[in-house]
Length: 145
Image (cartoon, rainbow, N blue to C red; front, top):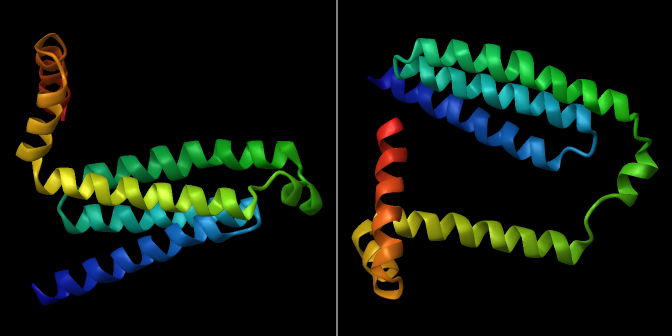
């Protein structure tokens, strides 16, 4: 059990570090390669959880096919470094997007921690003709997984 925990933490740390590398890399090719390493780290976690088929499919589908298309498009665009800087977001936009992303992250965590309270609040403000079909959609989507 100790080996499993150590490997899980190593793969998780790699996934987080390479995930940060996807966002922080200035060169789009380096960002795409960081994304490949993130996907390989997640595949390692899937193998630890005895989901070998899911790990293989993820590596073949995402790292093998979709990222090749990403890199092809990046190479096809052939952006120069000065052109990449012109198309970037300004500092206030980056701050706003970061704060908005953190708010979404913590809001989702709150909803997942207290699902009954979130459901009651949503049902209190919405009419019944909206709540019942939405519950059916949620059940259908949850049933597909």
